[in-house]
Length: 233
Length: 96
Figure 1 (cartoon, rainbow over the protein chains, first blue to last red):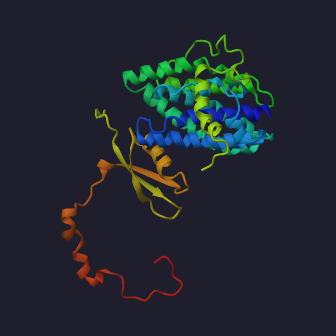
Figure 2 (figure 1 turned 135 degrees about the vertical axis):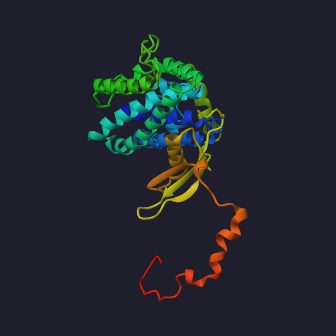
Figure 3 (figure 1 turned 90 degrees about the horizontal axis):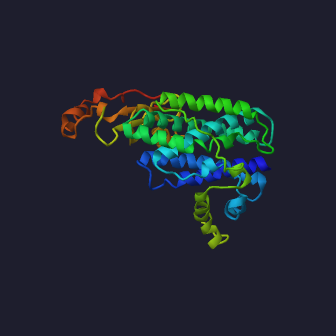
């Protein structure tokens, strides 16, 4: 169940990152929006990880190297523009991926068919903000461009093969690029022309290799469960 | 462009079921109408409360003033012929 683990870890890790905005978002309305997206992703993660094993054990008791999520989703929230760029890149990928899976008849079809509607909203949310930040003030434009550039090198990993994930990766990649390019251009932003993978990334998150900040995120996510095994509300 | 740093206030109206009217659900801040609609979705319809949302800039609403309450609302009470209470309601009629 490599595929369910990879997609489940994507959803879990991004859910946790978005949850970090609680109490810190620029405005209350946006905080609720980000928390809603985080909860959608957490629901997907629970379904996917349950296909692999015990969801709590998988979420709370694995070491960093055992996580199979993309490096993109573990990147720190940064400023609001970074969070939105990460959302744009990932939700566009996830909607196209789930769209393909929903049309198939594999083990993930049911989940994908349900989740694709949630993810379509996540993508819309990211696109609306990309347009407003990119085509907003000089400062918002600069920050949004900086965020899109900084995260670009994590986007190539989304189109690497994953065992058990039966999708047309080339179609996924071209559809993703077209969609993201359209939004960035409308937002008066420049599509980064730098490499979409780091030479150092070596297959990266899907192989269990993660970036520096991920360990700290895991420590925070897991510490309660590890300090008080079996604790419940 | 609005130079204020605060986003404008919007009033949210939600239709809970087809056939019913939109009902005032609350208000929220948003930079523009499209974002107000999305915020309204997140704040007021996440638990299946609605099938349709309207958002209206709060400044576009003209409200009656509490000071004018008497001339506005009192006269009708002493004119009983304004109230449709003089006929029998047939049995079996609901929602009246």
